[in-house]
Every structure is written in structure tokens, then in C-alpha cells.
Amino acid sequence: MSTGRDDRVRLGEKLGYGVGDLASGLYLNFFGFFLLYFLVDLGGLAPAAVGLMLLLTKLVDAVTDPMMGLIADRTRTRWGRYRPYLLWGAVPLGLTCVAVFAPPAGMTQGEALVWAYASYTVAMLAYTMVNVPYGGLLGVISPRAQERASVTAYRMAFSSMAGILIGVLGTTLVRELGGGDEARGILLTMVCIAGVGTLCIFATFATTRERIPPAAINGTIAGDLKVLVRTGPWLAVAAAAILGVLAIAARAGSALFWFKYVAGDDGTPVVLFLDRVALFYTALALGQISGVVIGNLMQRRFEKRDLIIAAGGLKVVGILAFYLFPLDAVWPQTVAQYFVGIGFGMLMVLAFSMFTDIAEYVDWKSGLQMTGLVVAASIFAVKTGIALGAAIPGFVFSATGFVAGEAQGAEATAGIGFAFALVPVMALLPAMVAMLFYRLDRATVAQLEAELAARRA
Figure (spheres, rainbow, N blue to C red):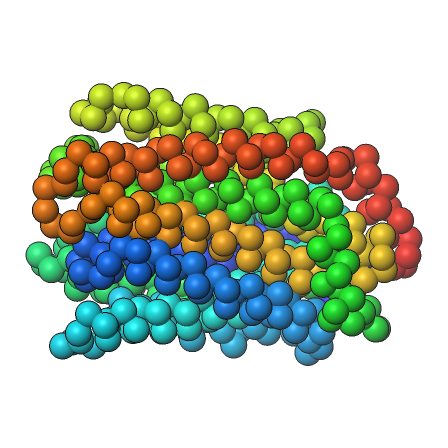
């Protein structure tokens, strides 16, 4: 681990760090797009049972995410505090994610539900083991906020690239690898993702450095948690992240159902080999990349808080426009979805940049180095948003009489539309309000950065 005074993060290291989020993005996007469909429409499990599963796993994460952050903060190895977990966790993460889509043949419905609960819980534990230290590494990759913001932009660009790959290739790989068997196609596609993801995480371990040396003595676990829950900037960004991600996850999780049962899409390619579902996800991912670039450039002149509020407004307009267009208005809907992606990309690049600023703020204010905990709690907020966004459609479908594989009645059709469009809008409005309580502006960050540099010197 470096303790030198070279604060610059060169291009190769930025790319090396960013490619780690390509792995995370591939896993999470694939789960977000296909898990509910795999378990409910193909597996025959009750939508409410799967929704409950997604929520209950967050109770586990509520303990394991902060605990992983606390453990990483206190780890001391020749590779640093956070990087070792990338080396140790990459393979278990890939194997457990594959297991979610590989229930043994001949299971009863009850056994299949138990398998889903157990395998998904273990997969999320493996994800925590890798992704929390990965996020913590961003906080110590440079003591300069501007450098961390730049690295965050690379990270979010690779995350958006993962969305593009799932959007462009996801349904195609499922179709081609499955040979008519969607469940088999989903499993084999996840096998491919696991192989690529493992290599990406190894690359991040090999190419990155930790430039902020650990404190000789850290605070207590209880003391660190107490400080975190009293940190106003973190509470504001965490609330916005939960609700902002919930909106996108609810939309992604219900999209396959909306296109199949509401729009009546039969999977016919619209352009090249892309069907409407692939076009929908690709537009989101392309917009996300644009949003990352826009957010990274604009944060140099405007406050991050104001940009996130504007991004939320853009997503609301895009989602409502998509919803109000005729069902067969493919290209207007695609354009609207692109603008939803811009807002989402801005949210993610700014929020993760804010999380590392908050870790520095805590260090400056309290003298406690708890980067891993701050980032872990922030990742838990994002995962909570994903889980809620995936679970709520399941509950809505169950309440409105959805029946897998059959023509849906008016109430079930309305329920799908509600989960697909109105739930996201209802989540985004309070997310924008939450950001009004974030008051860690650029002048304060510059001040604390200078004082921390003097203290560390």
C-alpha cells in the first residue's frame, strides 16, 4: 500500500478501478432485469413470495453491509485495507450468482422457493464481501476530492457499459444459448457474466493503489455507527439513493411483464437483432453513460445537490412521457427512456462522489477513519433501493390478480402499468425533497480537504 505523496490517479488505474464496476453492473443489471421474471413467469413462484424474499434479504444486508465496512476499515495487509477482498471474493461471487439460476431438477414449488431464498441470500453476501471493499477503495485511492470524482466518473461509465451489454446482448444471449428454453438461456448467460465479472474484479485488484494510510487507532464499532447515523449529509444522500434507485429497479423489474402483457410484444426484432425489451434497456444504459459525463462535467460549476434534484426531475418527465405515449410508439418511448437514463446516470455519479466526500467530512469532523463503513452503509442504501424496486412489483402483481402465462384482466394490466410507471414517479418526488437537506457544498469540501492534508502531513 502506498503512503507516498503522489495524489494523482493515472489513466490506467482509473480504467482498472472502473472495470470493477463493470462486474458489479453486469451482476446487478442481470438480476434486476431477469430475476423476477425467471422465478415468477418461468419458475411459477408466487409474485408476493418472491417480493418478500427480496425484502428479507435486505434484513441480512442491514447487518452484513456495515459489518463488512467495519471489518475492512480495520484490515491491515500488505495489499492494503480494501483490495484483498477483491482477490478473495471474486470467485465466490461468480459461483453463487450462477447458483441462483440453477435450482436442481425435480424440485417442488416449496423446495424451489427455499432454494431461491437461500441461494440469493448467499449471493448477496458474496456481493457484499466484494462490493463494500471495492467502494471503500474509492475513498482512499486519492486524498483529493477532484481525483476521486474523476475516478467515480470512470466507475459509473463502466457501470453504464454493463447496462448496455445486458440491454444489447442479454435477451439475445438468452434466446441463442437457450435454444427455445428461456430458463436454460438465462442460466448460461449468467455463467458467461460470472466468468467476465471474475476477471474484471481481479483486474481491479491488480491495477489499483491505496494512497491514504490507515490511522494507527480507529474508533469503536458502536462509536462509528453512532457517528454515522448522526451525519446529516449521509442521511440525505442515502434517502435519495434508496428512492432514486427504487424507481429504476421497479421499472426494470416490471418491464418484461409490461412489454409482454400490456404492449403485446412478441420479441420480434425492431432494429438489427434488438427487440423492444433490448431497445428499452439499451436506451436506459446509453442515457446513463451520457448522464455520467454530464454530471461529472457540471459538478465542476454547480453544487452536486442541485444537480441531483434536476436529475430527479428529468427522470420524472421521461417516465411520464413514456407512459403517456401510445403502446406502439416505439421510437418516442425509446427517446423518453434515454432521458430517464441521463437522470439516472447523473444521480449515480454524483451520489457515489458524495459518499466519499462524506467519509472525508466524518474524518475531518470527528477524527475517525470510517471510509469502509460510510461506503458500506451507502451501498446498503443502493441495494435497499434495488430490493424494494424489485419487490414492490411482485406485491402489486399479486394484489391485482396477475396469472403467469395467461392473458391478463383489466386489473392485472393496470397493476403492471402502476408498477412500471407510477411507482417510480412516486419514489422520485420525495428523493428530490431529501436532497434539500444536503448542505455539504463545494466550499466546505475544499476547506476540509486542505485541513485533512495538513493533518495527515
